[in-house]
Length: 167
Ligand code: HEC
Image (cartoon, rainbow, N blue to C red; front, side):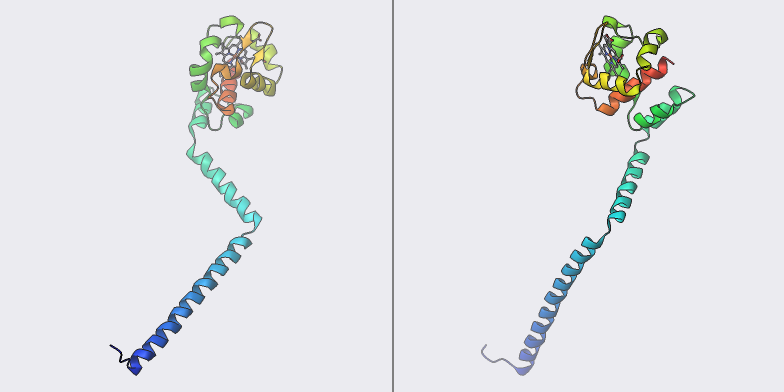
């Protein structure tokens, strides 16, 4: 098999040229991809983020549903804070144990007199006390009701649920 025909050599040469061209093309495409990727402007990135956020809102309607049906008038504060979490469900599982019956001085759900001065402190203070815990004058409110696995938003939604019940 030592004989190499002219056509074989021509083929080998063309093949090598083709191969070289393809490698070069791959390199060009790679460089081009880098350039394009680097040029996606920050506004577009912001737009992509915004789209992701909008998608997140669309696929987590649970909180909105609860907000809408737990009372006729959904307060603005409530809507913002409980966009993705079910305040009543969190209250039922993590807070009702004390707040339903008023255990150890906990202000009872729906007890307007007990809640009015607390609500007057402002939502941020209530959130802060519920999330981080609060050694009050009547009793001791444990951080997140003792359920540290709750997210801050879940606790806020539960606070909103209690505040609403006392209004
Ligand atoms: C172990 C009992 C217990 C559990 C569980 C509990 N709380 Fe409390 N909470 C209290 C007590 C007691 C107080 C009153 C403290 C005081 O003012 O002396 C209180 C007060 C509060 C206040 C009022 C804070 C203020 O500044 O006046 C909020 C808001 C609150 N709790 C939210 C929650 C939320 C939300 C949950 C569930 C995630 C929860 N609590 C679970 C016992 C509890």
